[in-house]
Amino acid sequence: MTTLLQNALIINEGRSYTASLLIRDSLIAAIYEGEHSYPEALEREVDEVMDCSGLWLLPGCIDDQVHFREPGLTHKATIESESRAALAGGTTSFMEMPNTNPTTTTLEAWQWKMERAAESSWANYSFFFGGSNDNADELRRIDRRHTPGVKLFLGSSTGNMLVDDPKTLERIFGETDLVIAAHCEREEIIRANRQHYLDTVGAEGLDVRYHPLIRSEEACYRSSSEAVALATRLGSRLHILHISTARELSLFRSDLPLSEKRITAEACVHHLIFSDRDYEHLGNRIKWNPAVKRLEDREALRGAVASGLIDIVATDHAPHLLSEKEGNCLTAASGGPLTQHALVAMLDLAAEGLFSRELVVERMAHAPARLFDVDRRGFVREGYFADLVLVDPKRPTLVTPASILSKCGWSPFEGHSFGHSIAATFVNGCCAWRGGELSAERPEAHALTFNH
Image (cartoon, one colour):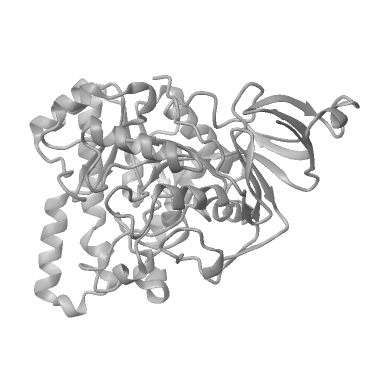
């Protein structure tokens, strides 16, 4: 199958330029810079010509943090349902987290996910291997070519995944040369805060506005700083997920290229969009761990994305049923769906002048590919896999319940209209999303390959 994408504005590697792009089978075969600059006979030789005038052509986003809930939690999401939502949002590759049921802390559990994704995923897939207090030996069995890294929860999580044994942490940080992706919140501080507010306010008064006070700035900073100190001492490759506070930014550097950094950071879309001022009208719909915090934190995170203190922007897509989001800040589930609207949300922030559209592509496609050394993805380059997104900058996206593809059936963005829309998404050369609809058949998604 050959497809000619004609006269798009390619946004890639810090440049924006008009070009046409030839897809042959699963790869980008040629890029013809300039308007109508391809050979005259090419239109007659290809299987399909798509006029992309007025559209932006981006590399597909690579999301380094999603929770697709399979196995064990499939009443709220599956690999199939959430990968379809991802494609509708311009994400063509994902790295899924291990806090499922059972947890992905054995090679057998990891292999099950790989096989399930091969059968059902609409996007390219990979799965983190989860660390625990008692599986350090199992980490030696990891399939390095197909595993992005080791995920550590340095705060409470599903199942036996809280890693708080100092000896285990020393061993994992000291022995693995894979990326250690860490959720950093200090559990003892959270417990003390929880008890304080139970004693002073009472459970009946603890609405979601207390969530960032319980899962506090101090809980985040203490855990993140300890992880950075340990990684610095042992020379580990540490990537701290979903930074949520201005204070944590002091732990990172912007004066080095990504290739030279041993300690990196990720911000998530909800921490860049929302603040504690939004709890009043959105309530538990924006309850995440780590918590959405102060407006000052949000503004600092936006600046860190622009400056390079934050290396990657991801989603922490973590769907729950709305019924599971009910209750006080101690009982309502933390997490929500984001993958379908992450890219258009970030492009809207760029349109506001917070950063350039080229930087959005850098943080959501190029940087994940570089940081995890993903083979031939994350860039618009000849010879790379044709994971591509066409964005319409003039057609808005109105978020309605009927338009939501995530199995949970809701979004914190319901009723909001984004200024951009995803016109088409290609996975390995196959157009899987176009004109607001998925293709009739599932595209041939690939397991991601890592060159570490």
